[in-house]
Length: 246
Image 1 (cartoon, rainbow, N blue to C red):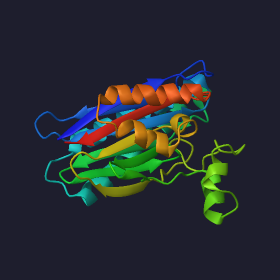
Image 2 (image 1 turned 90 degrees about the horizontal axis):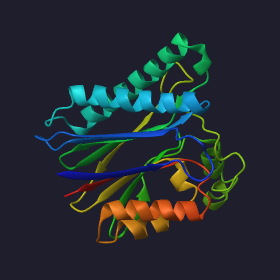
Image 3 (image 1 turned 180 degrees about the vertical axis):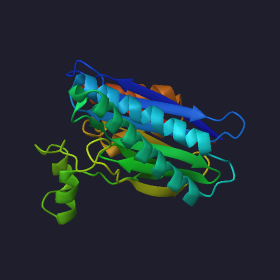
Image 4 (image 1 turned 45 degrees about the vertical axis):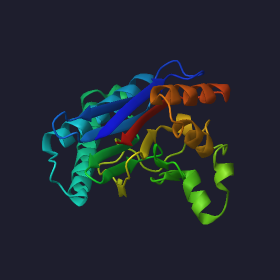
């Protein structure tokens, strides 16, 4: 069984929330589909792109997901759903050129009996959180991640780098959506956190682990993470979806 919680907030600087999220839990199979997107391309364009991606991804996966699917099959289905989302965004741009340049990141988790399958495009992230610690699952598709990999800057320097918002992959700008997939086994009590870079840039991994691993109301945990983000400026929209295997 999977339990879920979520929060999204415009932050302290932006006028509009271009993030979007979606959650669907099948009441009979208890399989969960969760997705978080961070839109780009102007106020209206970014919000539209993220909502299209969330709705398209959820619909494609929900329409084909079966409880007996192996994680590799779910991984392929999730990649196809991301491709559908990419095509839907591009179609919206063709219908209205005012949305030219819009796109979105995507990070999603689809559960199976032993864990979840994570899919990501862009720099929204997925973390695996246990009592022992926190581990980042996804890899950012961003300029600063490339610089960190090359050893040009440290991970800490990447948090404040002037080009930290430059992403190298997204849904929308390119005809083909390139996404990464991860199969993540989970033990009972483990968490998966999906979040946009608005959370990552203002809350440390250690703070995420400390708040979520507390044995109390998980909705309150997300509220406290938002409070930490706002204390640190919250210059971007802040969105998070939390899953726990029970």
